[in-house]
Length: 190
Image 1 (spheres, rainbow, N blue to C red):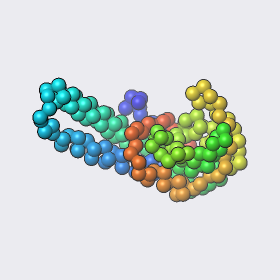
Image 2: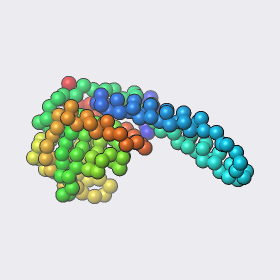
Image 3: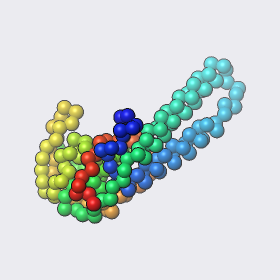
Image 4: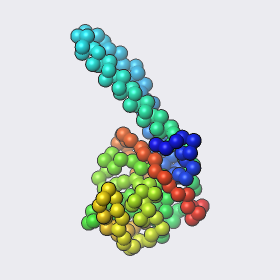
C-alpha cells in the first residue's frame, strides 16, 4: 500500500464500495474480539501450549493487519455515480466475454480477490488493466488488454445500471483481502 499521506489523492470509490469496506471492518473486528477472548484451557504439554500460543498470536497479528489496511481505505473519497448504462463507468455492472469465458464485473475503486465471489463475478478497479480497457466503452465494443504477460480479448455484452450491480457488494462470503487500486476521478462522474 502506498504512503498513507498520499493515499486517496487519485482514488475514488462508489458508496456501495464504502459500505462494503465498513461491513468488512465490522466483521474483522468481531472476529478479532472472538480470537482475543479465546483462552487456552491448559492440559497440553508445554510444547503444544507454546505452539497454540504462537498460532494465536499470529492470527491476532494477521487480523490487525487486515483491519489496519481496511481502515486506511476510509480516506478514499466516495464519488456520486450516474445511473446510466450506455458506457462503462464507475459503479456499472458489466457482462463481458473474455477469451470465451463469461464474466460479470463491477467497476469500483476497490478490488476483491475473485475467489471469494461467485464464479465468474469480479469487482475490478477502473485503473486495473481490464478496468482501463473497458472504461468509457459501450455495449458491443470489443478489444484486448494485457495482464500478467497474457493477452485477453473481450467483448462487452451488456452494461447494467449501478443500482442493478450493487448485489455484488452484499455477497455474504467472507472476504480475505481487499486491495485498493488507483482510480482516476473522471469528470464524467457527477
